[in-house]
Length: 111
Image (cartoon, rainbow, N blue to C red; front, top):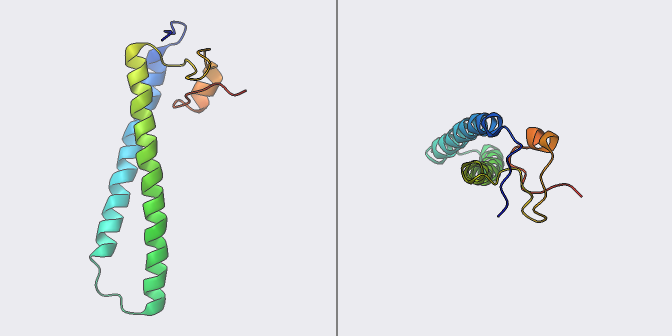
């Protein structure tokens, strides 16, 4: 695979590391919320229970998205390590720096 030498990998490594930390904190918070809700046996009103189920579903969806983002961040960081960060996985062309700054986990150029 082609390597990209025209990027300041340190800039993107910093962005991704900060995003990694933020995402890990979100995952921990969501897991904690889900755990606390599942242990709450004081709810016996049907409306409260239905409302809680909806919140639980929303938290699970958010958790799934955060875990997927975490995988993408790790993937991007590994590409920095091997020097292929910023190269489109479909076309092997460089991904514009502006796109990477807006979305540091981008894998492809926009056509």
